[in-house]
Length: 417
Image 1 (cartoon, rainbow, N blue to C red):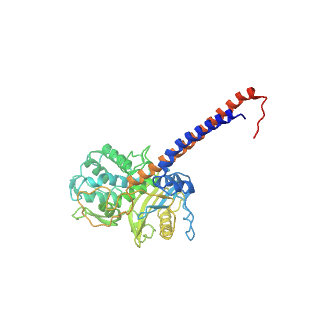
Image 2 (cartoon, one colour):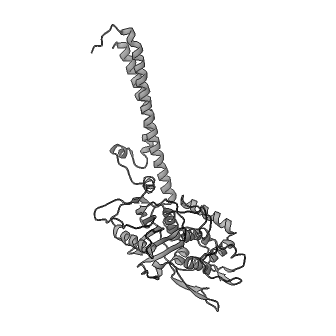
Image 3 (tube, one colour):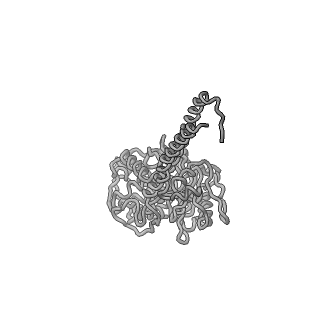
């Protein structure tokens, strides 16, 4: 090749390399943020909420095998999740973003939206209008019209008896059924519950209404940071009204794993949260237990085995496994939560002294921001790399075309070293 053609090739190649360097540089600069450029060079892939979330989107059981860590038990539920609340580690999960009808576990979201609105000592007289619209076949707490109840009594009716009459009454106090549904949907959005669609505040089977094991876990962990929520969720039995009177009667929590009933042994250390059942949803359960300073949260939706009490016994198996595995298990994902000392919704009046769960982890907003930043990092890197490859390819093609045009003119010349 002549000295003129070599010079031209060198110029074009240098321009291509410079252009590629300029395109790749911004990607490396961004990537050097949270993890550093050395991580990219070494191929390290730190576990973060964004990457973990993609694993949770996969079908089937998600579990990272570790030495001396047993595999989670084989359960028949369509969807489930086991979380260590203090560390935020999701220890194992199955189809956690699968949209399924939640039944009365949706009342946990109802409580998150409405519980902070009213003082527990506020007295409300139940009216005919309050109880209008209750679907036939709904669970009832047994509220009586024209009878005064404290707000705390109404919440006992929600948590212990899963009473739609208590939900309707509180919703009426909150501005109405539709407003309460809107409040619940907004609360789900703020918590990052992307799978939840609220159509009925009490969880009754309604077309289009779904949630997921992941979202129910968000509701459970947020609720346990609120002292009143934690109290009601763990109460086994009480009088309704609580202060007695001639019309008072006893009520017991329908969560069999909490109280021990219908052939189910109570689970040692269980602290709530909420159970549910409808013919369409099957059995659903949010259950939290605390042992030796560790709190685990299990959500389980629609067991398919057909066994009696399957929702409770499968949850028992997952809790037992979680307490054994948690000290050594690797996280398949991290559940974002609130800042230390924060709680979801400040109740107007704390009427009880329960033990809310507090977190030592970063705020949910910070975790999401970090995940978004890392997502942008990966996007920049791939776009930049693709751009660089495109520039180099274009330069090579241009050089080849130039050389082909040059060859007829230099047909008699011989390429020499």
